[in-house]
Length: 165
Image 1 (cartoon, rainbow, N blue to C red):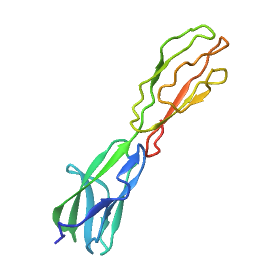
Image 2: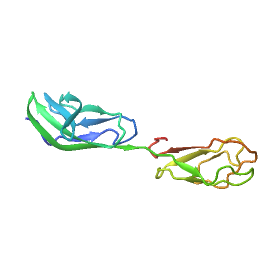
Image 3: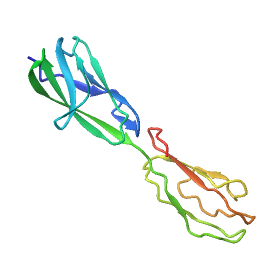
Image 4: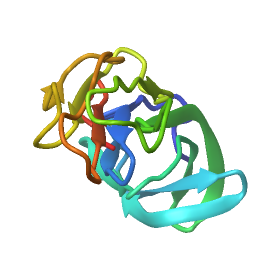
């Protein structure tokens, strides 16, 4: 009968949106089949214990997920294990808005940053012709363009884990 007190870890418990990681069953039991579940639904392919650690790859994930591990010995005696494995998904969201449109040459523009990126970094690009072409500040101010025209402004946010938007 499967041991319900098996240790379960996750190689990378926090990943970027679309990333993959492994749920690891430490010291698996021989001839025991380990299956990840979300609620009552089986997910991913089961693995057979070998007496050592076994891994089940999960992902690509778009949202955080908690898995329950069930163990079955030689196709009978199914038993839900006490251990659960949680994988968190991190994804910054870049969003900004200018305070004005159709400004005159030399008129200052404030770009309001509404990004969701706690503790992350910012990489603004205001384009050639801007008073400030690039900036790492969350809310750079006093941007202006000397010449009339259309300008493309971009913002790339990077989370502490390295996830980008």
